[in-house]
Image (cartoon, rainbow, N blue to C red; front, top):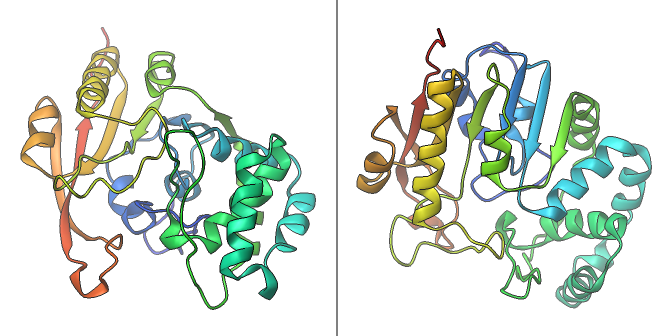
Length: 279
C-alpha cells in the first residue's frame, strides 16, 4: 500500500462526493489482497491511491465506464481530442448548452467520452446528473478557466492497465467476487435531510431498499471470507442498516452546498465487514 507520506493522485474528473480527501482513512480499513473490487467506482480516487495487483471497477453509469475504457485503450488520441474542447470560445454558457445537447443526442461512444469530460469540467461543481429521460442536465459552471487534467489523464491511463472496467449492477459484481477479493463500496449516500438529495446519478436511482440490500450483500460476502468496506453518511438510519459491521466515524467537510459559508463538517461512516475465515 502507498505510504501515508506519499503524494496522493487526483482523479481527472471533478466529482461530487469524490473520495480524494478520505483516501488515507479508507485505506486503513482495506486489507492486502490481489484484487480490489469497487462496485461504485465514481471518480476512482481509491483505485488511483491504492496498490493492488488487479482491480475490477464497476459503475452503473455507462458514460463513465465507456470513458474509462477509452482512456485505457487510446490515451494519446483521447487526450489530444479532448484538449481541443478546452478553449475560451467553448467556455461560454451558449457553447456549453450546445455541447450538452450534442452529448445528449450522440450515439457515438468516443464522441460522448470527449464531451463527457468537457461537461464534467465546465458544468456546475462536478455534478453528474441525468433526468428521467436519461439526458444529462447539469447547468453551466461559469468557471474562469476550466482545468484540463493532462497529467491526471496520463496517470490514470497507465494505472488502468491493471483494471477491468465494468458497467453492471452492484449486486451482480459483488455476487461474482472471488473469495479472496476486497470490496470497497461508495454507494449514493443516504440524504442528510429530505431536501438534501440533489442528484439523480442514474435513472434507476438508489433508494433505502437498495441501501439495505447492499448491507445484506456485504454480510453474505463477509460470511464467505471477503472483507467489505462501505462509506456513507453517519446517521441513525445508516447505523441501523450496518448494525452487523464494525463502525468507524470521522468528521469531514462537504462542498456540495451552493452557499460556501454554509458548508459545514458532517460525520462520515465506514462500515467494515471483516471477512471471516472459512474453515
